[in-house]
Image 1 (cartoon, one colour):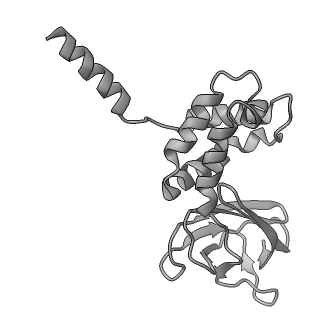
Image 2 (cartoon, rainbow, N blue to C red; image 1 turned 45 degrees about the vertical axis):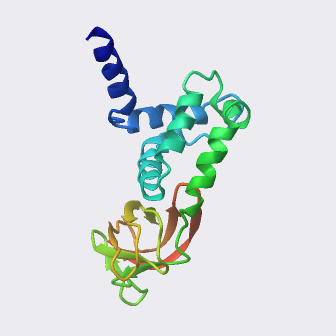
Length: 195
C-alpha cells in the first residue's frame, strides 16, 4: 500500500497542472535582460512581454518548449550566455515552434481617424489584422503624450478583432508597434488623435 501511494504522488506531481507561468517567465526575462553577456535591456517591459509570450505559446502549442527553456536557464548564472550555449537546443526548439506566430502586414482601425476627422483622445478603436493570425499580437499605439496597448486575437480578421483606446495630450499622428512572440512590426498608423 505504501509503495502504491508513493507512485501516485510522483505521477500526480509530474502530470499536475503547471500553475501560473507568469512569475517564472518574468524571472527568466529579467535575468536574460540583465545578463552581463547583453541580451537587451528592456527589463521594464518583461511583464507585458511575458504576457504576450504566454498567449502565443498557448496559441502555437509551444508551452512545453518554453517550459524547457525556463527549466534549463533556471539556475544559470548568465541566462543570455546559457541560451547561446548549454540551453541553445531548448531555446532553438522554442524559437522554431513559435515561428508560426506572425504579425499583420497592416493593422486596420475603425473608425479610421483621418487628419480631417481625427479621433478624440479616449476614443475606443477596433483593431483587426489584414491577414489571418495564428497567434495573438500586441498592438501599441503611441501618440503625442499618450500610449495605449491592445491585442488582436488569433483568427480570421473577419471575426477576430480587438480594441485600443487612443490617447494623446496634443494633436498628432500616431505610430504603431506590433509584436508577436518572435516578430515585430512598426511604423505610422494613419491614425490621428486630438485632445
